[in-house]
Image (tube, rainbow, N blue to C red; front, side):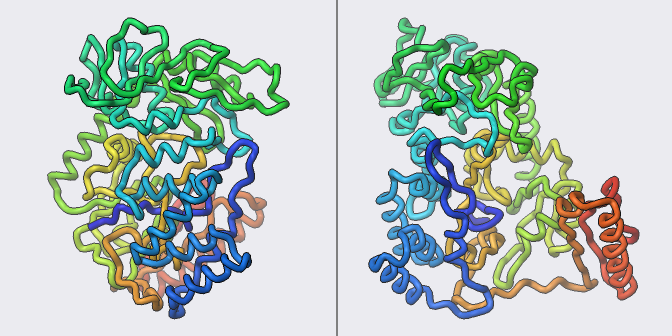
Amino acid sequence: MISSIAIPDSLSMQTPVIEEGSSPVPEDRASRAKWPSSSYIDIESEISSCREAVSCGLAEEMDLFNVLMCSNDPAHHSEAMEIALKNKDEAWGRILLFRMYYNGVAADCDVKTALYWLYRGNPDFLYNNGTRIRYTINPEIFLHGDIVLCGSKDEVRSLFCICAQYGVRPDHYICPEQDLYEFFGTPCPDDGQKRCYIKFSTRRDLSIGPGAHFVYCPYDETYVAKNQLLIPRLLQPEMEGVEIPVPVSPSELAAVRNSIMVDVRALNQNGYYVGAANSKALVTLHLDQLEAIYKMGKAMYDRMCSKGGLFLITSFNPMGDNFNRLNKFEGMDFSDVTYVVSESAKDLPMLLGADGLVANRSDLKAIRVYLSMNNYEDSRFRMAPRMPLYPGYFFHGDLDTSFLTGVARRTGESSLDLVGPVEDDCKEMVRTRLKAPPMVLLNPYGITIKGRSETENERTYRIISALSEIFLEDGYMVYTNTPFPEQAELPGT
């Protein structure tokens, strides 16, 4: 069975949350807990040595956390959880708690608790030098059970946009019209259970159930109540007195992309949620578009379920990038796994000797959105390289949900977390040999090549072409990435 552990590009500490006014977690911390896969490792001895180093002040608790997570022993994972809880007032402690709860490591998988730790401390998730959203979500909403959106249809839609913007999945709604699409949740049962109710601050007339009550303020207010849904970010000194743009349409948002901070509440009330694109710019998606994508993903999900088996949904990246993350090792059983790949990676299943399903970019995006909006409740489906936060279509740019454990964390081979537990005897992990006919993947790094001069680009093309011809003459099936002009495939590959 495919594991519930998320699949990262590298070790899970590589992309920390950076808080306003704080420093990022040093990137070399994770590498201290990574040993070569070719040698025998005595995990117990390494953990004991690291504990002693911490007690003597020669190492930090973050280092011990990483070494503990390189073990498969649940007791070591629990000890690591205690270290993260002890450091919950530090940014690195909270992001580790988020990832552990999100992936069900040393605790039951609990997305609400994960989000509580993610948002505690008024964090900043956007790309470096990217535009910040003026408000963040109140982490207290995750401490009171099911989340219920309350109000008219338009009000519930606005509240839903805010939830989607911060990766929050609503459970129920209270709405007179009752004709909301299924991803808004279900009508709230009148059973007397305490829940988290969210409504507009202007709707004092609205009757809701017992539990915690939070209000959304669509207009600026000088007083910030403890039960306010959105919390304004602390302004840096250079922002004092600066007018913060309030765009009402996607075109207006695009026009203010160079602003330091932007208030997107008007967009939320017009049916848009906002996220960060790879270009570092803020982008929007209307709920009608999200509904269309969701329906497409649901149809694809139903077709895949009728086929049966397990499914690994890959990224949009080309074959070489996916191969690096998804290569197989001895002891991993892929006999019942179907790789769902993009057209740019259509030959990956054959290269790995696995079943494959080729999807166009729209279908691949749709199934990822559908699965993320249902919190991956079907264990037959997993995503690589990581499982995005709700709703699965552009969220905060640098947010990494991934978390490796055991041999996958120790070796840095994320593919070891793709399927059920791999026997870990702390010895070398041997890659599965490709079967006849012999195959080879030539995987030049596209970004590096494109950044070179035209002359260097042409020379690289000739070199890779010559290598390809040599392998073809020797009877190999040759696969290549294509970072060359017009993305043309090399002849014969």
